[in-house]
Length: 188
Image (cartoon, rainbow, N blue to C red):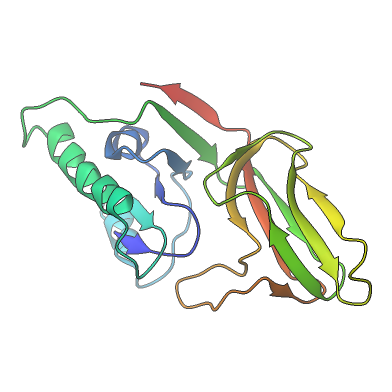
């Protein structure tokens, strides 16, 4: 279990374990995916040990719904392994995204990103997700629209990472939004 600045997400190359954890947003990794050297997941994968990585957001905050998701997930894994004799406690809907299915919206100038949706929100294709205010011309903000339907992973808070300071103030080339697309939808 980790913490980060985006949307709570589980990821694994084991589909059954991934779904059993019970996160709403999931990334299914290809079995051959190389992971970071020195990480526990790398060791587990190299030794054929099932594993699921969970990023709980927001980082460094105790939000009851996120803590409950983490607790439910740990108990679900114990249920999957027959260590608890109860039914899995799953959300009504789960999304599985494949790695690489995403839209990335970048800034073309220095400015301010005004988010109109939040991380974890489902957006439709062409939906207004943010306004970009160019610092040279604050009178006419540019509408930022989702190119495809999907789940907002991050909006106006990039770069993302455990130790990255984020801000709505951006420079040309900075990432404004990350939207994961083409999910498989599971109704529980």
